[in-house]
Length: 100
Image 1 (spheres, rainbow, N blue to C red):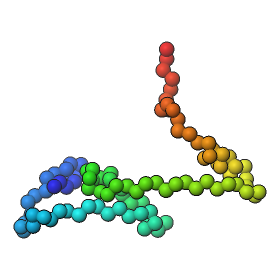
Image 2 (tube, rainbow, N blue to C red):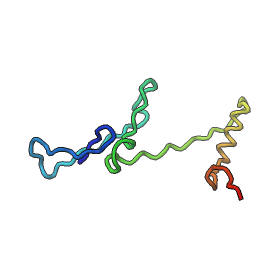
Image 3 (cartoon, rainbow, N blue to C red):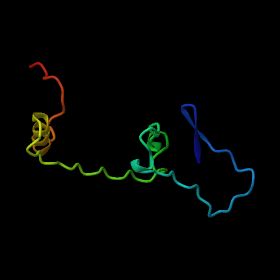
Image 4 (spheres, rainbow, N blue to C red):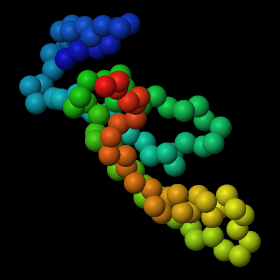
């Protein structure tokens, strides 16, 4: 129904040929990260440029696997393990305290 030109969404002009009444525009494709090689440029997230409802829902994030440090683990491996294991979401947003 609309297209992006510069920074504005403009209404689509009428088609030059008659379109069937049951035709709908295809949704945007969402390729997984595995579809890109390491030297490919980072793709643009279509959700950043298209209005809601055009793109399929974003896939859920992959669960982070915590590996238990072994005998040869360095101090940073052990610190990372415990920080990840006991990580909690902050109860208040970060910010400066307000003066009384």
